[in-house]
Length: 378
Image (cartoon, rainbow, N blue to C red; front, side, top):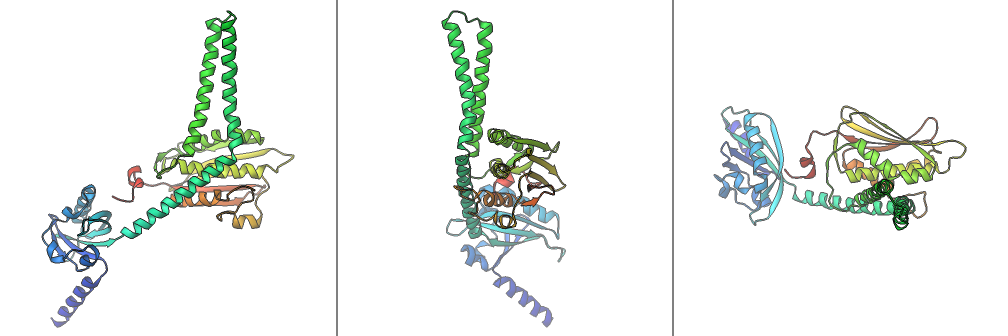
């Protein structure tokens, strides 16, 4: 009996001195026990919380998630359930708690859930600042890329605008000369409309890539992103006399990503490949974009048959501010790797057996919904 009492006192001492909050919640949500650490962390006297419903202290938007976790814990004794939620501090402010709930299997008559809570508010603030910094760097890199592509984009826009001008002048001449027949003018007007839509599409893609704002993840078709980027860089590909090939896996599963950021990675890798191909003489310049799928990830590959990478460049190419191009910020590959890693993937480069380089990056397949990925809260 003395040994049992000693063990009980040690257990109580351990609970009361832990840095986490230990709470026991009844089946109806009423708080049965609250550890002293809640006073230090959230300002409450533990005695004042006994009997109160825990849901009254949870942010209204997180109540449903809290109820779901408690129910799962009650219905599945011995298994742990976790969630992040906002809990009201005694001073009225909201703190983000990471909680783990479990209904113990011993004693068998335990009709409540033991909840272990940890305040992660500061960690969330640091993560949010890091994401904002990442987004600012990403936006800066996109601006730099657009600056480098300005001449090609201007040429791409000039083509449909010049065609519109020519068709419009032709219609005007026929009408002014009295020779314009509807059968001749209507097809020309259709061509004007088609060229205007082409110019508008170029501007839309440019504005989309230059979008600045909070990262937004949604279910997207990566094959479609690859096609968009190939179309967007078509003028630069033609100007450099490169043959672009697409080898896209059919029925590729969708992934939850920020489409603009993934497009940015693709643009950076394709433009790097085009730069590598600039020095190729006496043979065809080829660029291949491929997509494949495994059980748990998608892989995108950008391959060229250029001169390849020297050992020195291969070692430094993902370092911030490293560039072999004059006037470049040297942020493209560094930002690309950060974007891919923020999505839970990996970006790397390998030498091709026949010459040239292949950059590959993966995007993991996730079960979560787009809404879950948009937020770090429940």
